[in-house]
Image (cartoon, rainbow, N blue to C red; front, side):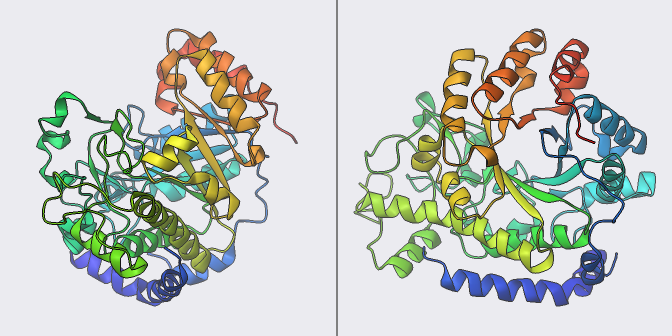
Length: 431
C-alpha cells in the first residue's frame, strides 16, 4: 500500500490533468519514470514498423505466459514473425490486475515478474517487438473483473460499481457467478464473472484514468486494445428490454437514478419498488441510454489517451453480430468507427461453421469500414483440423477483410501442425 501511495503521488500532476479533461468530456457528452517527459520522446527513430496485416492475441495467464520469462518473449517474437504477424495484442490488464507498472490497478503480477527477472515485462516486449518491426497493443479487459472481488476499483467505488440484473440482483450475489434459479433452467452467463456497470458513479473515470496511466508509463506503446467493452452476455440473448423477455443488466439503483437525472424520464421500472415483477416503461429510451454509457466510456478512454499520448491507437475486440451487440449488450461498435472513437475493430468470428463464418465475413467486408475491420479468427477451434483455420483466413480475405487476428498464441504453439498451416498463409512482409 505504501508503494502504491508513493507512486500515486508521483503521478498526481498528469492524473489531475487527465481527470480534468475527462470531466469536461463527460459534461459535454449526450447521454518509475517521468511519464510526461517520456511521453514527449515518441518512438525511436530507427524503428521501421511493418504494414498491419495480422494480429496475434497473447494471453497473460495462458499456458505460454511469455511475459514471465525474457527467453519466452524472444520466442514469441520469433513465432510472430513466422506467422506473418505485424501487431501483438498483449494482455496486460485482466480481472483488475495489471501486468504493467500501475498505481491504480493491482500490480501484483507485474511486481512478481519484476522481482523474478529484474525486468519490466511490457517494456521488454515492446522493445524486442519494435526491434523486429512489430507493433504492440496493450490488451485490456475493460468491464470484466473475472472472479476478482478484491479489485482496487471495487475497494474504491463499492458494490454499486457492479452490474445489477433486471430482477434487481447484483452479480456479486450470483451463486458461483452463474444465473440464479429459477432462471438458471433457461439462461446461462456467456462468460461467468463480475462486470462493472459503465453508468455507475466513478467507473468511467477510474477506467479511463487507469488506461491513461498505462499509455503514459509506456511511451513506445503503439496502441490500447479494448476487450469486454460491453454489458454481460446471457444465453440465449435478449433482444433488449422492450419485449420483457430474457435477462439483461444495468439496473442498479444509482444507474437508474442517473438515467432519470440526465434524461428527465421516469424510472425504467413501472413499479420501482418491485423490480423482480415490474414491466419496463419507455424501453427504447432506456436501452438507448444504457448503450450510450458504454459508448461514453469508449469516448472517455479515447480522451484520456489523447491527453497523455496523442496518436496512440485505440482498438476493440467486438461481438461480430453487430445488431445483437447493439440490442443486447449495449455495444454499438459501428458508431465507434463512424465517430472515430476507435482506429479499428476486431469482430471475433469464432466458429467452426464455415458457412456461418463466410456469411459474417461477407457482411463485414461489405460494411462501411472494411479497411478498419480485422477478422478475428478462432484458430484454437482447429487444433486437429488446421485446414479449417486456413479456409477461414482465405474466406476473410475473399470477403474484403485483408487483415486478420489470431486467437491465440497459446493455441498455435501447442499445435505444431496448426502453426505450420497458418504460417503458410502469411503475407510476405514489405521491405
